[in-house]
Image (tube, rainbow, N blue to C red):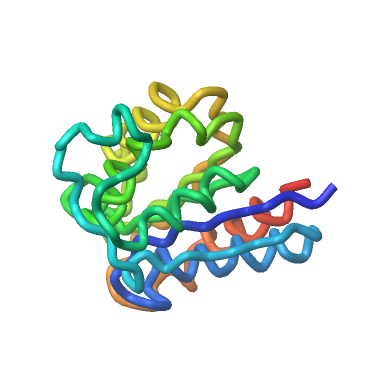
Length: 180
């Protein structure tokens, strides 16, 4: 049975290392017969959460930007891939802002399978721990029924294109292809 796969790419660089891993994941997921959409977050306007609390009662954000559309897609998806370059041992600001802005409807992002893609210049995947703790805090502690299905570590990738020499490219493809 075909699944709806939503890929959230937080790279600031199209075809950068984490974005390239997204594309390979997408290629595999499409070959497996899934419906796949990638959102390049940098192309969207997502304002910072203001912490005003209005959404706690209304379940709607007072801000008028692209986040409501993204949130709708997250709720409708069966599988969500969250991809970020790792800056100073954490996810980038783009991804963190997106996560913060799920507050109005985060409990509706229920029973999803999650994959995480991290890319960093550092060769040691253990140094991606803080980034994954951020993702897991969001998914495991906040989202009902969330299941982590896999992590792709794109380590040792500093310059655009470095990831192409990494085994992470094949892993991303295979992980995408495994979605049924």
